[in-house]
Picture 1 (cartoon, helix red, strand yellow):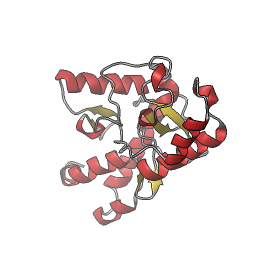
Picture 2 (cartoon, rainbow, N blue to C red):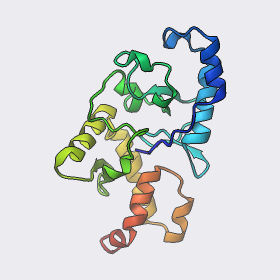
Picture 3 (cartoon, helix red, strand yellow):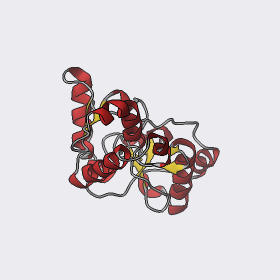
Picture 4 (cartoon, rainbow, N blue to C red):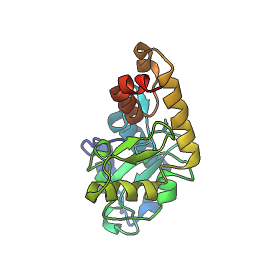
Length: 199
């Protein structure tokens, strides 16, 4: 999971809210949703020139993405139009926002408020995202978040495992050219010497 570094609400969105009598999410048209996604992707979710879903870290773009209410709009109705509650997520139907739907738990790691890297690491052998801690509140939060977002879906673990093998089999200088799963890449670079010795 990636930290989303929220910036100020864009002026075009403030203007839209001033002009529109917003009652619920249905009052948001295609045009404003597209503008919001472009703005968030370009200013908050861009890493090495690529846009990523903050939950699963798959590459996304404006057309193949959705606005995600981190705190679900039916459980937090007053936040349905709050920019600070939005991120742009992938459309994968078995993970992330599509599987999360309206689930919420106070132990969920909100990537807008909390840096997920402090809670997760990876299993080199399985490609799974795993809690960094074995007990305590940080462990509970990691487990709950993995569960709500289904971050260890079989397909996702297989894609990560392929990347792990790819990184372990290239020269260390060439790792910079692999632009997938930013936190997994960072984790592997940090542990590369140890991993190379134990291959």
